[in-house]
Length: 209
Image (cartoon, rainbow, N blue to C red; front, side):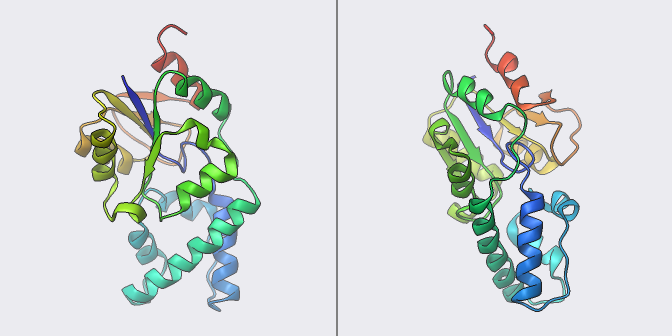
């Protein structure tokens, strides 16, 4: 192993409650729409590409309007997450500190531009990560972005840590082993390995521990 690539939502933190509140407030107060977004609804959608989330939430609108509304929701979300950091999974910083002492760490998420930067700023975890990519940066989906990280950083044997079938399929596409964060939002059959909490990565990835 020579690198670890992480998903964000359902793997590093759970932002769904804060995001649901921010989106609902924007939709009701600014767009004047009678729509309430719940964290449970977001858990079922996170991991998909943003246009697909917009289509699921706002099917009555044109594609152009869907994208306009979801982009505005995301801006409200960024502001909310910078005011209040979302809950982090157990012992996350200690885990990242240990892993980053041995491997370069990366983030590849199917999020909008700026979201990973918000995560890094809100948590102060930028010091642990070497690079990150998302569709908002490249216009490409997760599998392609994983391959780009692998290529640009000359990785020979990386792994990816995520929590959904979308993550699993992206890893299959990229040819990267998938470690399932079973504490997250999704269910995955037959991953390369599974963890019950972030700290489980330490004995899995750092063999001398």
